[in-house]
Image (cartoon, rainbow, N blue to C red; front, side, top):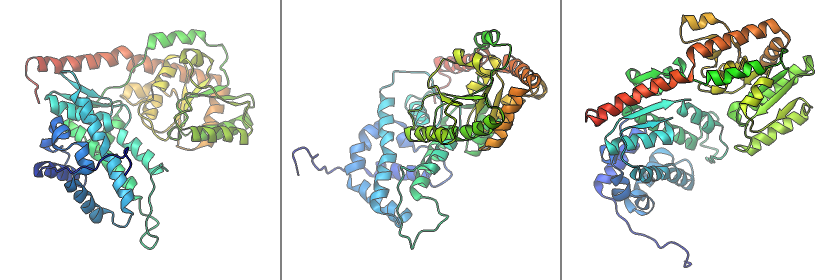
Length: 434
């Protein structure tokens, strides 16, 4: 052993700590959603069961081996071991983060996942309320990512493998995010979403219905509204997709749609506005597709841009995503007088056709909605709006009216100011310690 190698350690874990760990793992295989009581304090992770314990204690080693033989003996142990280790490591990181927090009266997380874990543990540690707002349904999005991930290796003896079975490691990660979401739902005093469909998904994933509430996003209607006067008299034949160049945004479908639209409308342009460094391989494939389809003069990758510069030059906004929450970019476009054509994901249908109440629906269509991964339908809508000025103006009118009535930033902020005041006043009077 070289002098740089870490010295082996002999550590032991108490029976109570092991019972808590086993109870936590049992939660991941049942419908119970409670974090074991012993784990409500960061002291558990910093003293009773540290990450050193997890790596070196004999009891932990025996526990991992036993779980392997019970759940995954058909796969190589080394793959199972490293997956379990990587899955658990963030728990101690989160405990250290929570231990370093100043005294607060309220925790508010913008998602489940690791942010939800911080809110859950912070709430337990400090005995204060925890609020949860999901802008997109984190569990569903991580499930999509994991099911398509190529970084998760899995090898199983061919005689044991079945064509239809799910990669066990992917299943393990999916179950991990599902369970920590349910624990956040269980601890949260209130659970907010941006639209009715998201609220229903939260309930499906385990959120108690009585805790759920919808608070729509809002945008700077006045500031963006000033851009309407900067528009040209004619509608620019420009379709703009504002978003990251990643697979969940399905940029490739947008490129295919532009190929179809360009055959009918030769002077059309497609602008992709957003970063392309999150998934460089996917971004490279998109650029290669543009070249293969001979769209170099039509489809442009513009990177980061100020929306105040882009929106007045845009004829249509588009989203071709396979998953969304409530896309702010659609509301920003409406406020700037730009209709939208989007796939039927998240709240896109509600934003474009109206979904808050009957009056919202009566306003009319501020664009169009198509199916996922349907470049032909997308292209048809692009061409219809960019060649039918009357239809485009009506969609613009509907978008402006909808965003001004239902999606104002001041309304959004007022909702949360009221909620914060309510919980912090209870806390200051000692009435909401948890």
